[in-house]
Image (cartoon, rainbow, N blue to C red):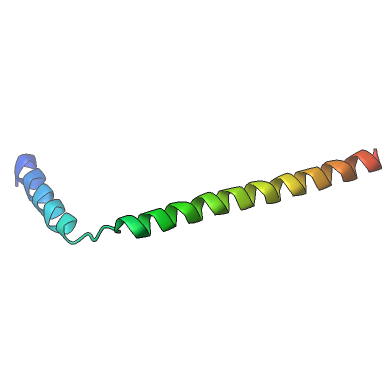
Length: 62
């Protein structure tokens, strides 16, 4: 089989699989985005607190 035929077959299979994809609706997308923002802020605050605590500890030891 030539490469062109293989590529056409692959692209047809991609189209078939892409039709099976279910995209989230607007509400679900907004909820997921909000959750990501909240988790990023939470992790940033946690890492800042750990960094501050370890810095304070190292300053006391030195």
